[in-house]
Image (tube, rainbow, N blue to C red):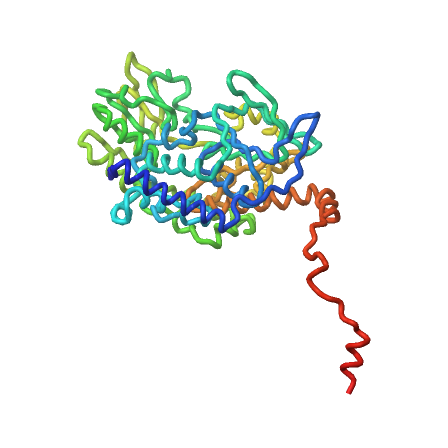
Length: 487
């Protein structure tokens, strides 16, 4: 759906919304007054909270922290306005979430996508809207960053993380070609779907020249596929989006190579989206945590209805079910893709095989990776319920903190997808991102008070702002009054 209001109308509508939002912030006391004593170490300032990542999770956490009087700094290696995947590697036409979800609005109606959209396009356009266009969501997040006054440092790449025994985390940050060491009391990883790893590359792709293939999460110019016979491995949402993008950019054909004999039809994860699980995943017994997450993983999430139609409407798109890829070999300027259904001769292959927790792909975490406690050391599932993703997930504490023997490790908080087994899907996905951000922000506020309890108690004892000045009353003559009351 393409909507193009006049520039004047859109600007006027947003100005009105922002005035309403400013009043909401005043009403809600946002941002709250700063209350944490500043700290230094080795003569240098120490930040209260540094956040790696300024996508929707980082921005939501910034808003939540400011609601409790903490101003974080967000470090993002991307250029301004290109944080997260929405305007870079994501290729869906629309978001998969229902438009009514409030996402990172943090309970402030004027901060919601709905309010932002209606201010520019009107209520009738909102009613007619099916799903939120992907790039429009990115525009909303750019606006969200501005109106919440998030402190984002773009072009800042974290290259090393070293927790220290004295309660400070050292973070080496590269910016403008120079590496400097930042210090923070708490570090939050808001690093997205591949936050502790990267793209899963199947064994059959190892050794194949990269000029002949790409992962669906790679940054890539799909126009280069014009006139080529393309294969796509997988049938999830990103596989459909990649296939459709290739077709829309003039691919001669796209063959979907799908291992399963049938596509999953029901999105089981939607069935789990109730407040009891959103707020209560952490409190569940281990066996139930595992059982729920493994069931959703095993059932698999079907590709969205619209994304699938986006592919199937092309006559040169072919869905091959029960077609498992077995090997891939280069033959001249082609690929020979051996499958359980036969050999496909293709010009290019896109593998859409998801993401994995793989610390070796994140060298910036090399100092902590060997020490992080994982679920494989906490819980042993039944043989039929084994799950590599869940086994590799970090075993997190109540505030998303890593656990392990390394001093200071618990000062690092995992607010990204790998937290799902411990805490549920509250650290990245749109439906519950406000819940997760609020939980972490309030928890961090509690920890800061606990860690600084002596200073806060001294401040309490020194507090001397008078409520009364002694002129508000006149002392009575008690003896005279008693005589007056005698019978």
